Image 1: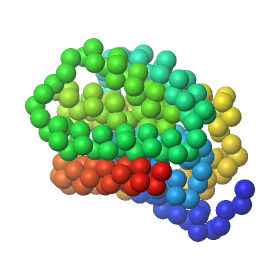
Image 2 (image 1 turned 180 degrees about the horizontal axis):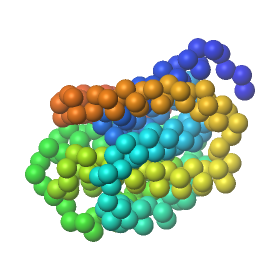
Image 3 (image 1 turned 30 degrees about the horizontal axis):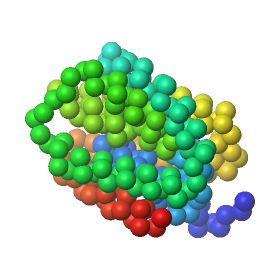
Image 4 (image 1 turned 60 degrees about the vertical axis):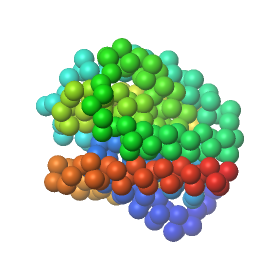
Length: 243
C-alpha cells in the first residue's frame, strides 16, 4: 500500500514526540503514539510498529540508567506477564479496529484518571501485586503493545526512588517488549509496512529520546506528568467518540 509523503512526515513527528515523552518520564510514549498514529495508519500496523519503537526507546533508557537496575524488582512482573502476552496477541488478531480502539480508549481514560486522582497518595501495595498486575500488563502488551499502565501502577506504589522506578520499568519493558515482538512476528503482524515506517522514523525517535533524557530531572516531574495524563484522557475519550 502506497502512502503520501505527509504520512511519513507525520509518523516521524509523532515518534519524535514519543521519544521526548519517554526520555522525560520513562513511560507514556506508546499510549500517546497509538491514537495519533491510528489517524494515518491501520491499527494492525500501528500496534506492532509501536511495539518495535517502544522496545528501542526502552533499550536506550535502560543503558543510560543501568547503574540503578535491580533485576529482582523486575522478575515478578515478568513471570506473570509471559502467559498474558500470547493471549493478548490472539485477542488483537481476532478483533476488528472499532473494538480495539474502544477498549484502548477505555484503558487510556482509566489510566489517566488513576494517575491524576490516586497516584499522589501515600498508599503502598504489597509485592505480591506484581503477579496480577504483571499478567494484565502482558495481556495489554500482546493486544495493544502497551504493557505500561499496569506496570506503572505497581511501581508507582512502591517506596522506590525516581531512578529506581524508571529503570525498573525499562527493564520490564525491554524483556516484555522482546516477547511481544516475537509473538506478533510469528502471528504475521510484523509486515514490510511495519518495518518500513520503523526504519524511516528511527532517527527522529532516537533524537527525541536523547533530548528528553537531557531534560530529565530539570523540570518538575509531577507537573509534566499531570499535563500528559490529562492529554491521554482526552485522547481516550476521542477514540471512543470516533468508534
